Image (spheres, one colour):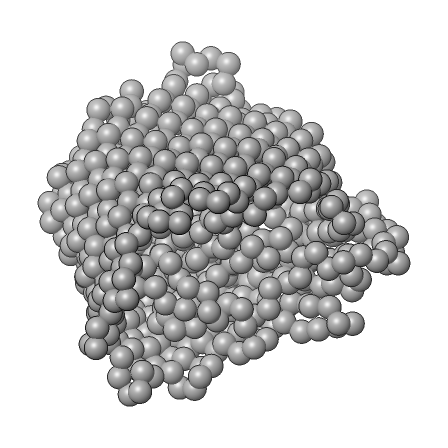
Length: 610
């Protein structure tokens, strides 16, 4: 810990006299005002949306001292990413206290949910180099996205182009970390291409925590001078030691391999009043888990899921406002030695309309999603958003909505010596409400919201008494969740350089109703208090420093403070970086039984050829 702290002080002193051009200016707060939120059918500027939405820009990512998207999302109050180790090998995603099955992840609007289990949500996480921004939509989002957006959704918007460019990055550091990647951008007369290839490896910070993760990403726009067609494809493979991910047995050496892939084609037809955006896609996920790494015959689970879908989203502008409508059809196939052979067909219809009154200061957007499941029949999710512009910069808003989640195949059919699924489970349901206010000015933005969620039929694994070892999936839990969230960001100049101070706080309270917690495996290990702050400074033309602080208090009583930092030095085409995580060596666990890594450092070199 002392070595890492001293290292950062020495770097700042040694580089204080260097001069170069400002290659990475910090994005100003006012530029967020006109960012178009693309995760809904009705495209709206960030400042006009009547929901709680966080935007993480590519500049924020550069200044986050993060290596993976899991690290980035942890810096948003109200978002709980529970990691098991480093390198993004395995992490679960939670919003506002919901479970990992209750948060939907999208890539350029494509739903990346997995019917097997929500544990695979972040298997689809992309390398940071290809991300333009991240849209985090909190609260009931079923009427916008359908089921699985129980407590919110996260849409990763990828970059369209890097012009004509080639860059390479290599990183090395603690625990035998060795990372390398190449990113290529190509702008041609009638097409645009973005390619990224990367690999991250580590020997592990404790026994059996090694990993070898690869990622491949390709995005292209063809025929762009006429009817443009956009293609996106990605493939990620992760091989990692899973020590104590799910058990505490010292004789087990758990091991896991996952693969996640996506290919999609999208185009857009647009006139003055009508926009239609059709899409087809295929998503695949594969998971192999060994309870004993070197004895695969002892216990092995193999699951392969495929999802094939087609959707069309549209909006029409008239004198009455903007109408959004769409249809999403998909077929899911699962092959598993534990869960069996399964398939499901889903069709969802979306309808919403945005009315504006009082000289366009008042907006009211009712909407509904209606879904047919081949195994859970028909369900509807209505909702309503209301916003009022108090001033040009100050907006009050509120929303209510019903939300819903059908059981995963793990909930329904999984079995092992201590766990038993239940094919008679009913879907989870909730009614959520939220009110808030947000202020957006040239260099300062802030938001405050309070929310409440009443959930019924939550799926819990319970046992009949304290001497029984087998937990069975059951619709038993009723949970009331309430809380508040506060975010603020201030941009200012010092010595004619841009500086940013951002912080957020989230408070959450869960109350399990009519349930014996001693007999339950339902993990309400939520973040009761969550505080985050980031200071991004630039004191010299070619040097920027970032300090990130995170405080967490979970409902189990565990508290921890984590400090991260980075220094980036830019010299023409070369960029040097040093990233330190958990600087003060906090001892903490985010999920399961796996301690998080001690203090560690990563050295990076990036060279831009073009």
